Amino acid sequence: LRRMTLERNLGEQPLATLLSRHALAPTDLVRASSAQLTHKMVARAVKGADAVINLTGSFTGMQATHVTGAWNIATAAAGAGAKALVHV
Image: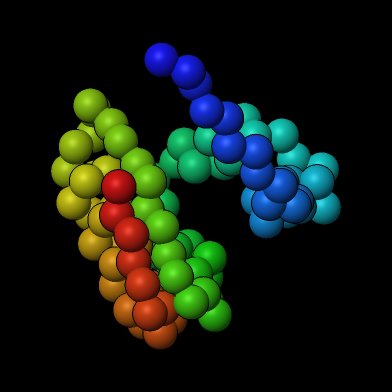
């Protein structure tokens, strides 16, 4: 079978722009999210957002990560007026 290659030029990506603007490396995002996030922290982060994405996973601290954390993000997104919430 012949492989087909689809070439894409999507321009500079928003996350890359933010990382560059704030002199951050991709690993800084992981380090920044290692502590338990409170509802207040999440609400401040999603203020004014049209959409919120919750991408998390843990085999330890299941209640804190997958229940309390997800609840904090969902309620903060709703409170901020986000029109979409993606939970992965």
